Length: 110
Length: 413
Image (cartoon, rainbow over all chains, first blue to last red; front, side, top):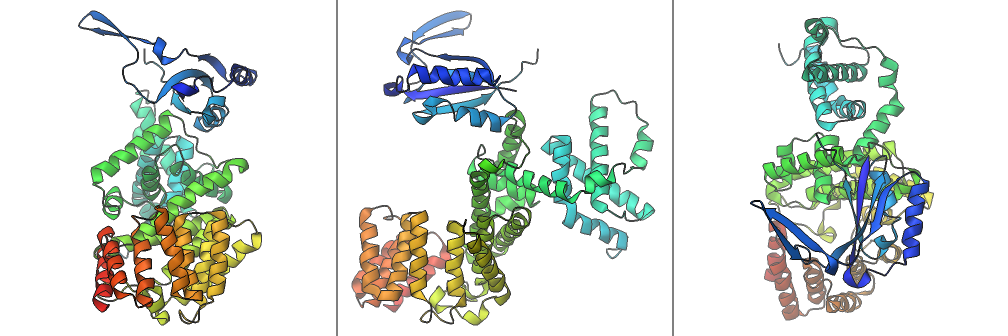
C-alpha cells in the first residue's frame, strides 16, 4: 500500500535540516524497497495557484491560505500498513523540526 | 418459548460470554469491522435456529466463529453475484470444519488484544478511542455510550463510522504491537481504560446509574488486560481502579452528597476489592518496572489499610508522592503532595506549597487547588480567607455534588 508523507515546516525552518541528511533518509528508504518518489520543494513564495471556473482559468500568486507551516517536501512510500508508514515517517529528518502528515493513497476507480 | 428454556439460556449465556471474542476473531478472519459485526449477529441468529434442533455444541465459541465466517463469505458471494451455492442447503446446516484452529485459546486471546490495540490506536482521536473501545471491546450500544458521555447519539455513531473507515482506508493493522512499541501503545490503552473508569467514578448523583456501569466496564477491561498482558502498569491500573471502587459506597451520602476521604465511614469500604487491589500492587512493585499507575495504586492502598485519616501513614504517603513526582512532574501531583504534607506536618506547611503552586499559574483555574487552599485556611482558623477561596472554587466547579459540598463548607465557617 502507498502512503504519501507530506513534510511541513515553518518558513524559517525550511533549511533547518541539512540536505545531506534528507538525501541519506531517501537512500535508506530506497535500499529497503520502500521509496516510490521523494522531492524537496522550493519555499511557498515561489508557489502559483491555478483554478478553472466556468471554463476560465485564473492564475494567482501563492497558496490559497496562509498557514504557519508550509509544505516543504514529500516522500511517496510503499509500506505494509499504517504502522510501518508511521515508523518510516518518524525517520524523516524534518519530523523533528516540523511535522509529517501521512495520507494513504487512494486507487482511482477507473 | 419461555425464558427458562435451557437452549435459549445457553444462547444468551454464549452471547454474554463469547460475543466479543467471536467478534475479535471474525475481524481477523474477515478483515473488516462491519462485515464481522454482521457475521456475529448472523451467527447468533443461526444458533437460535439450530441449537434447539441439534443441541448445544460442545464448543459454542468455535461453532459461532465458524458459523459467522460461513455466513459472511456467503453474503460476500451473493453480493458479488457469482453465487453458485445451493443457498437453502447452505443456510440449513453449518459444518464446523476446523474446530481446533478456531478454538485455540492463544489465538483467541491474541484476537482480543488485537481488538483492544486497534481501538486504542494513536492514529485515532482520543475521544474516538474511548467510543470505539466501549463499542467493540465491551459491546456497549452506541446509545449507551452516548448517554454516558453526554454526547448526542448521532455524533457518537458518526465518530465510530469514521474510525472504522480510517482503520480500513489507512490500513491500520490488526495486530499486537511489537515488543519495542509495546510500552507506548499499552500506555494509550491504559489511558483509555482509566478515562472510562473516571467518567464513571467522578459522576454526579443524577447519572450515577449509567455512569457506575462505565466504572465496572473499565474494571472488566482492566482485568482482561492483566489476564492477556500481565505488564506491571496494567496491574497497577487495575489495582488503582479496584482500590477507588472499594470506596464507592462510602463516598456519597444517601442524599447524593460527596463525603471526603477523611470523613468516610471506613466500615463501608469493600474489603474484597481492597485485598485484590493490594495483591496486585505488590505484584506490580515486585517487577521493579512499575510506573505512575502502580504508585497511585500504592497510595490508594496506604489509605485503604489505615483505620482512620489520623492513623494514616502520612510519611509513607509523602514518600510515594515524591516517587510519583520523579516520574510525572505535573502540578496536580504537586498539589496532592502538598495536601499530604499538610496532613503530616500541619496545615501551615501545606498552605505554603499550595499557594506557591497557585502563584505559578498553571492551577489558577483548577477548582480542587482552590478547594484545597480553602480547606487549609479553614483549618488554620482564617475564616474570611477560607470563604473567599471556597467561593473561587465554587465558580469553577460544574458538578452538582461538588457544588453542594463547597456550599456546605462555606455555611459551616
